[in-house]
Each structure stands twice: as C-alpha cells, then as structure tokens.
Image (cartoon, rainbow, N blue to C red; front, top):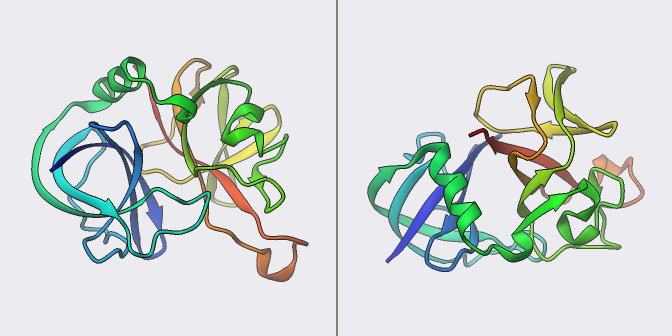
Length: 202
C-alpha cells in the first residue's frame, strides 16, 4: 500500500482533479478512480489529507507532459496535516525538478518561454510542479474568472481554496498544465495552458 498526501483539488467540467504526493517515492500523482476515470465531485479527498491507498499507473495514462495519472482505490484516511504539513513535506524532501524557485520561465523545463502555455515545439517531462515565485502574484477577476498576475502574465486559478488578494513571493505555489487544446481551430497549434491549482501560506 501507498501513503498519498493530498496537495490540490481543482475544478473540472465533469468532476474534480485531485493532486497528491506519493510519500514513499516523492512522485507527484494525479488521482483517478480504480477504473482510470475522473473523480466525481463527491470524492472524499481534502487538501492536507494523508490517505492509505492502492496506486498504480492508469491504464489510460496520457503521453508527456500529462504523465501523473494513477488509478487509485482509497483504503483509509490516516489524518489531515493541513497546509503546514504540505509545506513541511515539500521543504524536507528532495523533489528534484518538481520544485523550482525563481522566475516563471524556469518552470516546466523552461518550455513556457515568457508565455502561459507550452506547445508541441517544447514539451516538458511533467505537467504538475511546485513553484516558489520570485515576485508577488496579484489576484484579478476577468470575465468572471479568477487569475493571478505575474510580470504582466495572466495565469488562471482553478482551485477550491478561497482566493487571496496577493500570493507573496517565496510562498510555495502548485502549478499544472491543462489538456492540449487547439482553440477550436483558432490557434495555429495545440497548447497546454498554465494553471494555478493552489498555494500554501504558512
């Protein structure tokens, strides 16, 4: 069995997307149900939960960058360690390239290149990452959606946590890349847009 620390919960059109860390390996994972499908809105997971569960690579796992998909079956909730527990884990364990501090350009293997999306020309090896920004991120609402501004770039927020006016520099933020999308034929290429799925204020 595996212990998974739940670090994010984001909105989807047909359920929720739950992100976690395999505590034994440090691997970042995206939880699917035991059949490989998306989790429903009634999924029992909350940010900061530690769950004992079975975890295996999803039969329908996608190609890079979306490699984190896992088929999971919950066994029991161990405890909830809250945001403080997530911060403690991230700071005390070597997450390698999955934790990056500095300019946004350095995240996702440098494939953003001053943009808020990646293209097929430069595909990172993963689609979720922790980031410690070098500047504050300020909240705005645009067309009824929540965004955070970083150096003029508008990054969509898709999590369940109540918005805050400012995410200070130095705070751990969780980033993710959305599915490939071609803008319904408007764009010249498919793109994976950057999203903020959560943050961890001490």
